[in-house]
Length: 329
Image 1 (cartoon, helix red, strand yellow):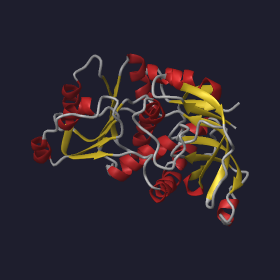
Image 2 (tube, helix red, strand yellow; image 1 turned 60 degrees about the vertical axis):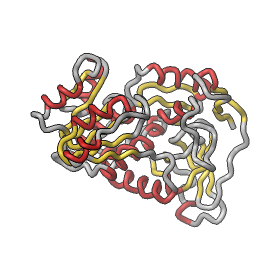
Image 3 (cartoon, one colour; image 1 turned 90 degrees about the vertical axis):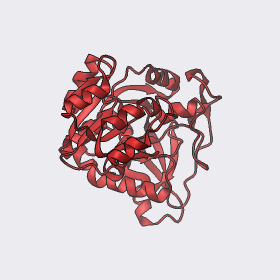
């Protein structure tokens, strides 16, 4: 099979297409013939040499795929064997940039009704990230006010739609007027252009000085102080990315005075049991919202597998809105 490998740490030029042996599914696993793979920031961070795959995971990048189940591991049981022939999406710890991949059958969901097999490749990782953090970690509920940083990226565009469906007041940050318009379409009640506006002051203005209940942050260190000052009493800051750095000074006095919580999580490194629980919750709570149209698939562009370098170069430019996908055909 064809599979992408990183020859070294660096820019998109380190990406190469290689020939590898087809993987073999173990007990409880299925083998998927991949139709498309979603591109995520974790893939880029791995390419840069700062986010290696978990122990035992494939060195091939790619955390989510769509495709057909073509085999089940020996001794897997009837429930797993019944997946053979089905169109599915899968949450991975690695290995998605390839024509075939094996995965724990519990980390697989059927393609949502009304979604193409290709577009489905960009759903499971973002849905699992958004749901596990906003509902699971932060406990977001109807009536809360939530700030989402980067509201038109792959994670952000999904989060805005999900929060709108929950009945949440949504604020978001974007970097252009064009992205601001899209953010409103996706569900943002208020949009802040971080290139033109004072973020902290604008949040206070929009919330009548109260602050927001939850901040969903992909930036990290750069926004830490602003985030904490923008939270309401008992607010929760959920950090899932470090685009703005990993080290910053923390004002513990501010946290104590406002009873704030900082939650920092990754999805990729969670154990198989935890991922299975997350995938099950996504199937029960998120898939119906996709099938009803409350959450629309946001595919920006697709690239063939042999153009993985161009796809990541486009991702690095920051001009995309929604998901970037790699197709096997």
